[in-house]
Image (cartoon, rainbow, N blue to C red; front, side, top):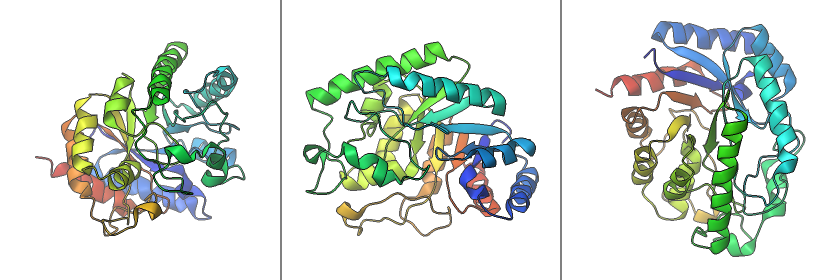
Amino acid sequence: MQDFLFDISSINFHVPERKALLESFRAKADELGVNMGVQLHNDENQETMDFLLENKVPMTGHSPLLEKYNWNFAAEDISPLWQGIENNVRLFEKLGITRSCFHGFYMSDAMVEAFGHGKTYHECMKPLYREELSLFPDNCRNRNFTHLPEYIMRRERVKQNLHLLKERYPQIRWMIENDFPAYGAGSMFPEDMNHYDFPLCIDTGHLWCICRLLDLDFHAETEKFLKGGNVEMIHLHASICDFDTPKEKLHDGHRVLSTPNVMDLPRFVRNCAKYGVRHFVLEIFDSAPEDLELLVRWLKELN
């Protein structure tokens, strides 16, 4: 298991007993013989970063960090984003970060405010709402709009801008993440994301909701992503949404791995590993060492 990297989400360390929690994760990682770090959540604060740096925790990023705007590489003019990207790269240098994922595709030319920092996801995303892109009236959840000429144009723009990002900052291994299917966020399907020809981060909760929303098979869609050869990072967590959850109420997961669910996460994890994915992020907001232990157990059952 030494070639795997397991990250805990930094949001777990917003508690008074965070030093003890960190040590419990480290002890479990040592017991399991695996490499463990922390991924900075995209609404993380400087104080938590300082705590992790002081305790010599290896870190990866979920950009943008400490910035006002999300990165919309589908916008007509992305020049306002470059200073924020530069700021993140300089921050990464201080923290020893060489890998970062991010969201990067909205069906808009707007600058999208970053989550956290006093604003919720819905408050930041609501200005992007377009009824013609939604599956239900007055509901933010996406329909499949990927056949639209506007989408195809913006997808090509995203591809070009992603390659520009990689050229400008080759010292960072960047990965674009599949989006939660809402507010016209455009990175949903493997066919479109593999078109980027760019490293990918797959979020299990986002993909699960896309499949439930649009009547797709979760494991078949996962296989399409993996066959593209671009998936390098997994945001792993459980969702309580099942086949009885009303589509207009589907929501994200971020539950501990032992949460009862119908996703078949062991199958998902083993399939990712079979295709060479070696970086798993427990993007769980109240995670415990037992999550790490369960994930490692699933991976050891691969053979």
